[in-house]
Length: 169
Ligand code: ADP
Image (tube, rainbow, N blue to C red; front, side):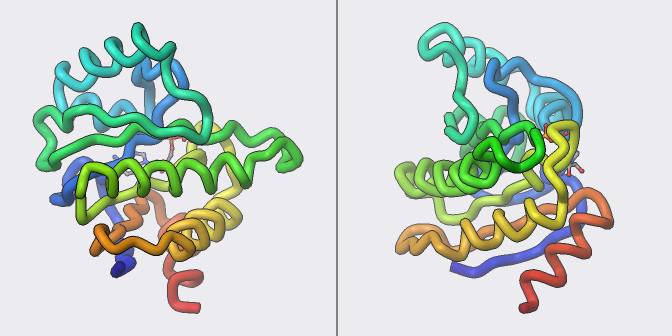
């Protein structure tokens, strides 16, 4: 499984699956969530609403899958990152679970390439340096025979610098 680092907009990625940093109500929002829904069109929200009706949404640390709508992907994976509350409230385990559960879901659908945003590092306030370490460790710990490539897509410079540093170590 190859790990790749890209600076830019995740909605432009040509991969089998992109991951959305969603909220537990799957209601859409700002940040990367808003960008994905804008670029992917209304079909994504229709499926999110169906999941909300059937399952009550998506708990923190878990992941659900929808169509990618107009995005150049086969599937969209929505995972819900933890809100940073100082670090002693299970944030690290929850963030690890986001990455692992997204990878498991991708693998279960025989998807081979997947792109992640920097989950929880926007309005959810997870410190970027620590989140980068958690993300990289989680992905590296995941031994897959199906997935061939995982792309970390960093939108801001700060995240990009941390990923560059930790991926080269
Ligand atoms: P969260 O609520 O999980 O913190 P945000 O969307 O607020 O989610 O932020 C998560 C990360 O997504 C931030 O680091 C932000 O820079 C990044 N981001 C925002 N827009 C995009 C985009 N179009 N593509 C990739 N990453 C993005």
